[in-house]
Image (cartoon, rainbow, N blue to C red):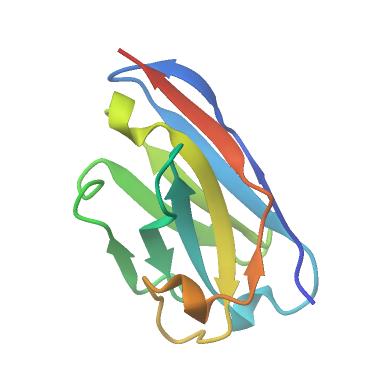
Length: 125
């Protein structure tokens, strides 16, 4: 069992930055790939970024590529999402998730077994 708790969301002006954190419980953090997804009001949940167990493999949605950076600290059992040059269309609830397919990340929500409760990110224009 893995529990995930996101933090770091908030209100920011367009062009600003936020850093999301996802702290996990349990001893098996290293055996999970991690992902970030987001859901805007009235829209389906969408993939943002993913990272494999070692941090050696990452992937991003085209909409955030070059602006967001995913990273993880296995000693702290935490995954991060650094978000720069934020746009109003980045406004959403951001969720972190854990996938047992540890050797690679995934952009498919169905491949994630555990989810956090989400943290709200609001970007004003």
